[in-house]
Length: 128
Image 1: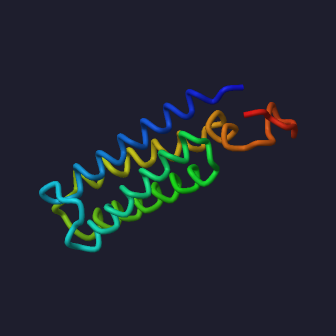
Image 2: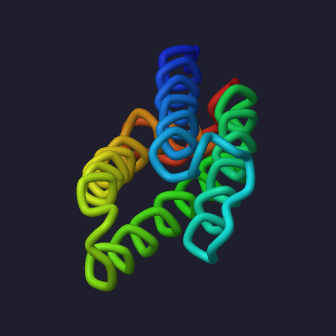
């Protein structure tokens, strides 16, 4: 069974997230921010690009890195939401996109693409 839609859909969704994180959070479109918040977002962008490679090659570490990116983004957005008032719209949009990505990453099609031994509820070898 080919998992091309998972590779393509996940890769594109993660690339869009990397672009949006860079565009929304980094001041003056520079690569590295000046505060710890911008530093965590910059790290998230690089980890997202690593997750894209993991999705393209269907490596389980790609799924794990993608989930870690969502965790970092959600925690950073929550911190910004409750501590400052300058980036409220960006924090809400980041939270919304990250929640959508968590739902996508935990969908059955995506999870089964990364598990080698699961198909229709039975444990058996799946050829990739």
